[in-house]
Amino acid sequence: MSVNTGVSPGRPSEPPGEPAGEPSAAPPRQGLVLTALILAAAVANLNMEVANVALPAIGQAFDASQAALNLVAVGFSLGLAASVIYLGAVGDRYGRKMMLMLGMACSIPAGLLAAFAPSVEVLLIARVAGGIAAGMAYPTTLAMITALWRGAARTRAIALWSALGGALSALGPLASGALLESQPWRTVFLLTIPIAVVTLLLVARLVPAKVHETTEPVDHLGGTLSIVFVGALVLMINFLPVPGGGTLSLVLGVITLVTGAAFVVRQRRAAVPVYDLALAARRPFWVAAVAGIIVFGALMGAVYVGQLFLQNVLGYSALQAGAAILPAVALLVAAAPVSTWLVNRYGSRLPLLIGFGFCLAGFAAMLALWDVGVGYGAVFAGYGLIGIGVGIAGTPASQALTDSVPVHRAGMASGTADLQRDLGGAIMQSILGALLAAGYASAVGAALAQAPADVRAQVTDDIRAQLQQSYAGAVSIADQAPQYRDAIVAAARESFLQGAQAAYLTGLIATGLGALIVAVFYPGRAREIEMVAGYAREDRDASA
View 1 (cartoon, rainbow, N blue to C red):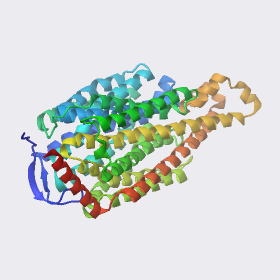
View 2: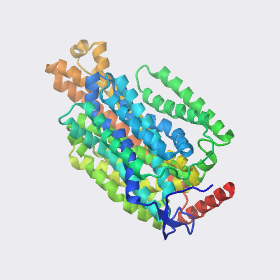
View 3: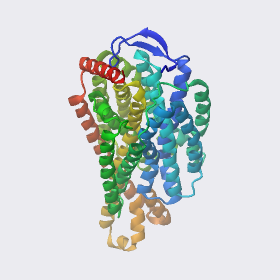
View 4: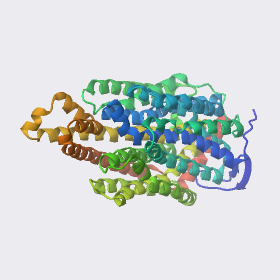
């Protein structure tokens, strides 16, 4: 069966990660097509981060606990991460363009529901729904780049997709902060609706309808298991530090183990698995997948905790907190061409290690320098180093996935690349947010225990619970007791800082573990080229 790929040949090239002799190729009107795909990814990337700057205002509006705010922050990533593997496979079978357009269309009502949510529970539902809509669209963006571009042209396209995706994620807080200067917090959830509308029109006009889709059936059972497994895992992490949440966390943990084991068994037995474990076991694939989860998770976790630190501890406005990350965004984008050169010259291993080195330095700077009253230079050091690290490591972490699988399984590679951002972001935000919440509550409790007896006598159980639930809760109590306001806010700020320090240390440890995995297991340039060429031969023989 012949397939119109919409790809035009270009100059031959043999970058690392491409079978020897494969020519460079790109689709007609490649700039416009790539713009449409990057804009589609932008809807997801921006939505993942727009809520972060608004969290203090959301907390005050709904009197929400820190655990509830963590769920709002991670809800979009939760919906996207849980659905992306299944929906990527659906796109591979029934049409990637159709899924891309459906996802863009569904993101619009999800954004409206979030903007007009009457409670924090409805807001959470809207965020998860928006993530599922992104799960329809986001996997198809990298899958289409994989199918439409070849050789060095693909490396450049992936570099742009990766760098601009990371940059747009980081720009979410700035755009939200600018809105919050003059508009209510609800408006941040309307930001991506115009982009979704424009993208819908561009995709309909420019993107080819069929590009190497498969005719094999979709493993719906395996897809359902993947949704439950990822969702239960992220929720378990979020509920672990919640007072009284031990039983629920235990139940979610059991669900995670059972569905995870069932998913593995199903994928080994299914004739056409939704996630081919044999392909995933290829060394460049699984090492890049783990590395990407950690490095992109580090970016999102750092932005999440950092935005709260800037507003709660340093007293930045929402706009100032969003603008604080701009230099890191610029460095992330500037690092992308360097990453492309490094990948073509030295293979994927070296840029991955360099990227992790910068991320390690970034978390070390946060741990050592971020304190009450610190200047912007220290803030820039933490954000900037992580921005450079993600910019350098992002391209090889994504390209190694697509180079390791046949083009008809591009949805699996794209879904994994999306998981790097979404699951990595969800897990790192959940872990760092959980540590932040637990550390804050513990520090507040310790401060109350050391308070004078006459002060402790005035702290009822309800007041104690509100003080410990979040920084916003402490500010609310302080507003009700003006004579103690400065003391309460100062104690809450110091308690928040203690929780944040635990989060930075955890980010440092996770990033170091990722660097170790790459150093030990990822092949060098010559071996990488040899392995990927061998995979290509295996895939051709299997389909013959």
